[in-house]
Image (cartoon, rainbow over all chains, first blue to last red):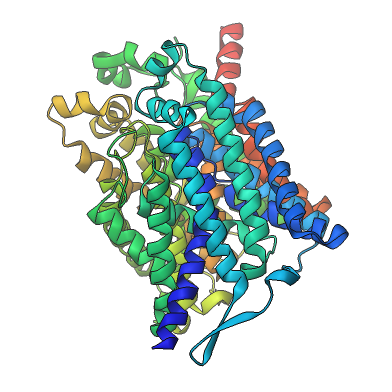
Length: 286
Length: 353
């Protein structure tokens, strides 16, 4: 029983890591229709920036903030120089951002070397709590807490704020929103920067659990795509649902049917595509 | 006006041709503008191995295989408007089918291998096509196939995971090595020297078949679906079937490229199914131009050339250069090299005549 509980908690914490990873992608993709396939590589870049900051000043929160700012700056450059000119050209955006992801991965390899890095858990989050005769690391509970806070903030932003209303209006009809005199360009730029900053934050938070290595970008990108497609785009709750489904199924699958572990998330992905192509909570059109 | 070598130009010229295009296709093409350059390039490629060292001719072999790979993706991307990001799935299935048939099943005949590999690719494409086209129009309409793109990325990756997991058959993550030279029968001995000619023959035959396909009634229907799927539906076309069959056709030619690649490299690794190889395919298409038939051939020459130069001088920075090729293509030559070359060629022809 406690075995299943710990597996469940592991699955939940993995789901929240996936959520943090996918939230930024889902924001830019679902809200602005910008397909940023460099998301995985940029997450990895954020993780390395965080590790560097921790190595220099040993401050976990500072690392998270600096990584977030750093990625927001990169995101601004990416948006201003490239993606702004590719509005509504999805295949072109995809090609461009895939190129960017190769560049980022190689730059990281160039600066930090090919060795996999293991993130240090900050001292005040070390230790475990015991459940029956098994134990569960506090850091994973911390990630779940941070994930919940960010989910709440994004949900609030989406449903209750003026920015959220503009975004939802823009998703339904961009031309009409712009013609009402709303500066949609500014709002969508800020959303893009927020999405990138989230990737940086996720990079720092996730490193103590999943580590960091230069070639991880592709794997993370695929996980992100699966979570976003399963959950459906357009709503932040959809991303959370996708992360929960994939995180729990994957963890339980690995624990009980280890032979099929490599495929588990793909099989769920294919089933969802066949049964509900727009995702579990997706909008039919955006 | 001179017809370009790559068939009727697409883009804004396309609507002008419209109904008259069938007649236009039958009209004799100017010899100097179309036939001569093709013949000259063909003859140059034929005599090239006599003048260049072996390693260069093996580079040209690689260019020709990649050209076939890119051409096959261009059928669905450029003509039918289906941007598949998992085309390596078919390249890899073709290659793996060959490797497994030779090394595990002991089938030596090249032709039997080719046939079985084509069947395998077509079956895989037919299976994956069902979920893929279920999501094609979802999200933002048929002109914006975002979910399709994501699904096809996952397909290639799923297959490459499969190749890693099925170790007894596929050799796991190290792949299969030691594929012998192809056995063509008829007393023809293929070695590393004349494999060049074999690939050349395949490229010519496959390119010709693909050219006929995209310039047939069927190909024009694909272009129509690309431009306006709703209108084609209103005209009574079963657009799903057209897209689905074009996907299988493209997969089969991608699979043939994979077969040739398996014999070329003598090994198959899971990466041939994964994103990295798909990325090569759509770099070839985007760089070559989606609106010109021969575009991917030009792009594969450039790509393999740059890859070789990079491997000599900057092997460690190759991914960076590879990534930069995407960015430069999209930002500097969004139309693709094929269009630029056509423009140049037309200007040249007008100048002389």
